[in-house]
Image (cartoon, rainbow, N blue to C red; front, side, top):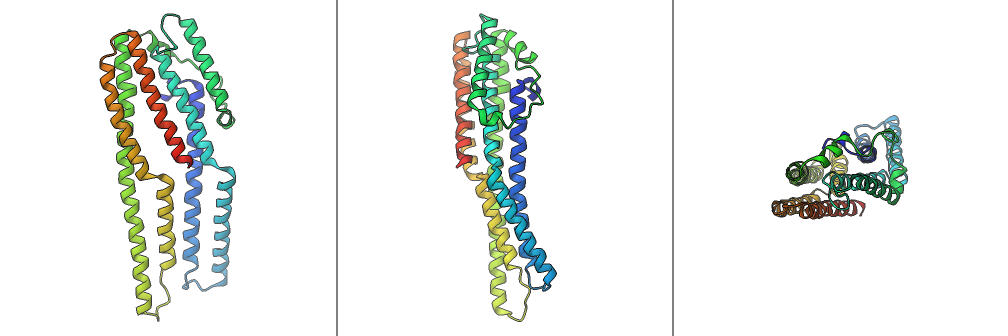
Length: 289
C-alpha cells in the first residue's frame, strides 16, 4: 500500500520519524565537518591570529553541535516515532487482511477492535505521540484502500498480501543488506586510506623536517570521523541482520502456500506480522545501544 493509504496516525509518526532521523544525521555530519575545518585552519600555513581565532570559533561551534545533540537526543525521537509507525502498519495489515481479531464476519466489531488497538498503541507510545505533527489528525484512520482489501475474496487477499507485504518486505531487507555491505566496504576503505596517508606524511615529515606543511591532523580527523560514522550507521551489523531476516521471510512463503482457508490465512498473517515486528523491535534495540 502507498503511504497515503495507511491510517493518519501512521503517516504522522512516519513523517516525524523521518524528520528526527534527518535532524540527527545532519547534526552528526555538521559536527564532523566542523572538526575537519578546525583541523585544516590549524595548519601552520595559516599562521595568522585571525585564522586561529576562526579555528577556535569553529571548534566552539562543533562543541555546541555536540551539546545540542546530547541534550535534544533526536535519535531517541527518531526510534520512538518509527516504533509507533511500524506498530500502526502491522495493525493496518492485520485489519486489511481480516486477520484475528479483525475477522470478516462482523464488520462493526472489527472496526471497533481496530480502533481500540490503535488507541492502545497510541497510549503505549505516549512519548512518540507527543513528538508527532497533528497535520494528518483530521484524516481517516480506516482508509478506503483498507476497506477495499477487506472486501476482497480470500484468494485475492492472499495474492495481495503475498505480493505487497511479504515480497516487498523480503526485497526491502535483501536490498538493505546488500547496500549496508557495500557502504561498509567503501567507508572502511576510505578510513584505511586516510590512516595510511597520515602515516605516510608522518614518515615524510621525519625525512624532510624543513617542510612545515603536512596535512596529518586533518587526515587523522577524517579517518576517526569515518570510523565514528561507521559505528553510528552500524553497516556490518545491519547487513547481517537484514540478510537473515530476508531469508526468514523467504521461508514464510512456504506457510502461505498452505493457507487455504480464512482461519489458516489469519494465522499466517499474524505470524508474519509478528516476525516483521520482532525484527523491527530488535532494530530499535540495536540502534539505541
